Length: 101
Image (tube, rainbow, N blue to C red; front, side, top):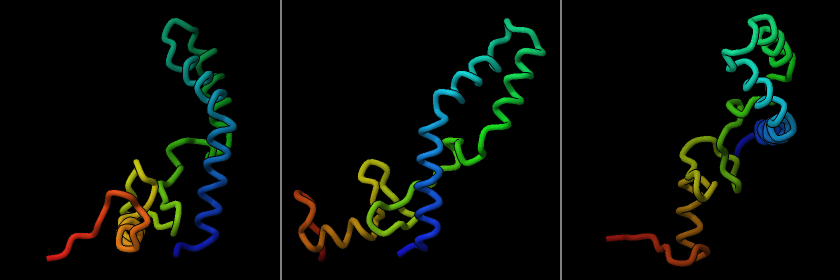
């Protein structure tokens, strides 16, 4: 099980990213628009820099929904390989069985 503080920090980042998503997109659109004046684009860049760092989508870590493990997480299932194996062995996932030979 991962540290509770690391899990909570990641949840905070997810919440912040969701809150500032539209604002960030609007500012990035202005920054990338080459038709606008340089001063206007620079102003948008300064506004973007003033937003919280943790509101950036890139700062979010993929973690297992069950254990909080940061490595070996399947994106589609949102669980780690270890949790998947345990659940498959217990018969909690329909259609998946652990193979043995």
